[in-house]
Image 1 (tube, rainbow over the protein chains, first blue to last red):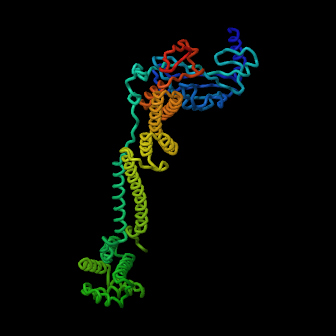
Image 2 (image 1 turned 90 degrees about the vertical axis):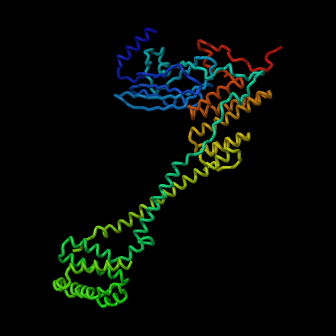
Image 3 (image 1 turned 180 degrees about the vertical axis):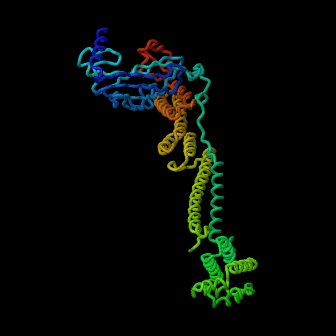
Length: 323
Length: 193
């Protein structure tokens, strides 16, 4: 045996970069204090170099390994580091051994198969001949575990003189429980209120039923806009804008495009505006001057911005008073 | 020059925004209503099944707890086959713990039936039922290892019928080899007179 170990050393030193199984490290969990149904994880790290590769298809597959042991899952990851290939294998077992007293059981060893394995084993032992060398594979060693009993078996009484029924020994079934609805109810209420709020916002936007009066106030809006406009100054662009705003308000109030000729008809139809008739006519005249005669200065002199503002304010007041 | 009013400029975008918000909230409301009333319906079914009414449910659409309640009711009526077929229909929709619970309940029923069979002296039937129960307990424990009742009951079930492995016992080579701790099942004539 010793001579083979020496030979292994020689081979390693002569061909340091040759293909080889460099290491098989097994990180074991604790080996005691297990009950039936417990799970345990073993991490196996296999390091190879050169053309040697772990034959991952030959790893054990999940399922029952023995009558008392299941392999629940096996995960395998590969990464390269400095020309070495490192395989991380996670094995998860579940124990189904029904112990009567503390009992030692053994998770069986399993071989690791390699493609192009070297002639040297990781633990330094070399194979006895070349044909065996080509077949050589490392292995994950067995693991001895101590399993503890789950219950006092003196109670087991399926004997002929038994006093207990099996149904008394067995633990009870799991009952279905109802789904908690408090949170769902809260969410429903919250979403309902939000939907209501959205609906109200939409109604407000389109000025339908509860906000109907809002639409019937074109002069109030015009007044507000002209007041805003006043802060921009009373120059020509503002003046033009103010005229347009008031025109639009008249159009909206009348329900059709209102021209200077229609002003008297408009006030006749709406007696509450009749007190403003002369100023309305003045407004329409100067507007006509402004837009159609290109005589802007005269228009501004005859019916200045302040007058428009005042007229809009009076119209809005009358409008609100009527509503 | 046209001086734009921020208010009127935003009017169009405001309309879009409002409609967008409303449709999102409407979808949310519909979803919340569906979730809430679905849960209420499921709870109604669970209550009825719990009070021993044999109502049928759609295993493809029911909630996990509804399915568990239905399986429990089938077990209570000794219709283990029905329970198993409901479980297999719904199996991929159930979360692991509910599936584990259903398997555990079915395994308990199998174990009780095996106990009956032992009492009758029908040991073949008992062994078959116990093997079924054990595989169900094992699957249940794999799905939910924290179910200590299942651990307890598989331990009980393993002793209802004597069941030692034939040949794949690794203990035969270990230092503390089998001690023949398990006594034979009572009442069976054994060996020659």
